[in-house]
Structures are given as C-alpha cells and as structure tokens.
Length: 306
Image 1 (tube, one colour):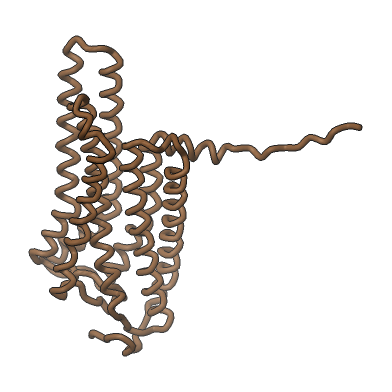
Image 2 (spheres, one colour; image 1 turned 90 degrees about the vertical axis):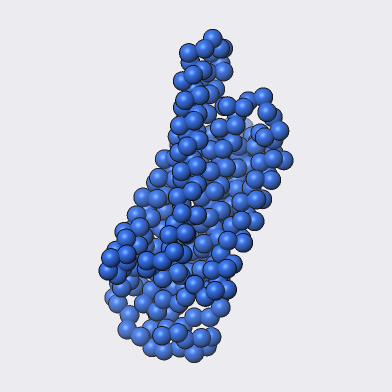
C-alpha cells in the first residue's frame, strides 16, 4: 500500500518495534556526537593538519552525514510506529537517496586512504600524488560520483516505501539493481583495498631483500600496517552488514523475512559508533589528541597559608 503526503492508514505495531527504534536513535545520536568531536579535534589541533588526516577527516565527515541520516530515518520510523500509521512523503525518499550516497562515499573514502599509503610506499618520490591538492581532487571526485550515482535510482522509482519496515529503500529481491549496488558500494572498493594491500606486501618483501636504509624499511612496514588496519575496518563494517547479505541471498531463492530492514538497521546503526573508534585507532595524531583530552587533569589551586 502506498500512502502519499498527509494521507495515512492505521496499522498494527509489534511490541518490539518501539524499543528497537529507541535503541537505534541512541546508537546514531552517539555516532553524531563522536563524529563531531573527532572533526573538531582535526580542525583545531595543528598536529592533525596533514594530508593523511585530511583523508581521515573526509571519512569522519561522511560518517557524520551517514549517522545524521540514520538518525532521521529512525525518528521517522519511530513517529509512524508510535502513531500506528503508514505514512511517507518525498522526504522519506530523500532519506533513501542520502543513505545510498553516503554509503558509497564512505566506502571509497577508505579506498582513498589505502591508495595514499600505497603511493607513499611504492612511489615515495612522486610528491604531487601525495599532495593535499591531488588528494583533495580525489576526495571531490568520490563525492561527485557518490552524489550522482543514486539520482537515476530515485527518478526511476526504485526507492519505494516499505510499509512493514516504515522505511524507503530498494526492495530486497533478485534483480540487476541489487547486484549492481552491492558491487558498486562494497565489492569494488573492497577488492581495490585488498589488491593495494597485497601489492604493498610484495613491494615491502622485495625491499627487505635489497640494500636499503633501515629507516626506509621501517617506514614502509608502518605504512603497510596502516593499510592492514583499513582492511580490518572495512571487514568489520561488512560483518555488521552480514544480515543484509543473508537476506539478499534468501531473496534469490525464496523471500526475505517480513521485517528485514528493521533487523538490518539494528546492526548498521550500531556499526556507526564502532567505525569511528576504528578511524581513531588508525589515525595516530587523532588518537593522541583524544587521549590528551581524556587524561587532562583539572587545575587545582592550593590554598596559601598567611
């Protein structure tokens, strides 16, 4: 049933809907606060004003956009559940658009980080490719592609209102669009990061067999660890998306569960916090700044004896 604008229809609400939506709101609100906190540190701490931290800031910012959208989606669903109605308007479709846009930019932001470390290891003398200008260009390119990519999906009516889940998404079923989305949003950047990792591993092993300075080898090994951490982050993110993959596979043979998106977004909303902690772990300057703030002791004024 499709209900437009201010038209609405009452519906039965399961007892577990409200607690789950409240939990999702808490998760996404914490993700928003954490992303803002990290971004403010990167902006005002001069030790974070480097090219690698610019890439981290890009990931934090798109995670902020992602968490804000998930927060608004949870509020929309909670509002409909509390009033026990089916209701949606064009803003619900816009939420779906932002979700696909932010997911793509988020995944390719991790690819850009891995690409940067690959360039610093394999082509250390090509400073232009390591410059803020070139990396900024790549960031802008991923944002342009991310913004354009979901537009045809919206205007061809692929994002629809799911009355059971109170959400606007592409329905889970066997189709070219589902396969294309999974490939563009997850498979391509993941394969790119893994290929970069093994290329750097091979290069570092070749370096260890040649006569080079110890500092050069140690720096290359440290940068290899950075790429490995990015892979852990991406695989951790995909782990939280495992229920979505399972439901897609189920839809190929039979059909996904009735409340598939409600289940999926419990894991997606929870991952928004863990991703930010993982980014903090990857970025040493950010991690150091956060620890300084946490460990900062208040100034104590000792009384003087007269």
